Amino acid sequence: MIVNNVNPMANIYSSNAVVSSRYANAAAASRNIQKRDQLSLSNEAQSFSEILKKLRGESDVRQDKVAEFEQKVSSGNYYIESENIAASLLLSRF
Image (cartoon, rainbow, N blue to C red; front, side):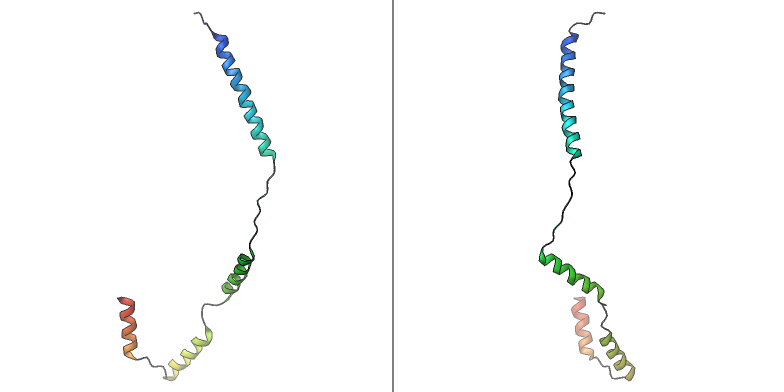
């Protein structure tokens, strides 16, 4: 078997090796650069964060209102008109 034109093919592969080594060197250099992420919050975002922390610390239940209605129910002084109940049911249903 006779193989002709081996040298032109070898030249193609060798030129690609040079180019790929350049890219590899550039990629390695860019990996060596240390970059740090930074975050800076605006004054509005900082105040919102503080308000949100305060709200999360608050209870969802208003104990003063609960105590008031417990006292009214237990003493028999709590009365709701049936028309108000019917209207609320109709509004929530339809």
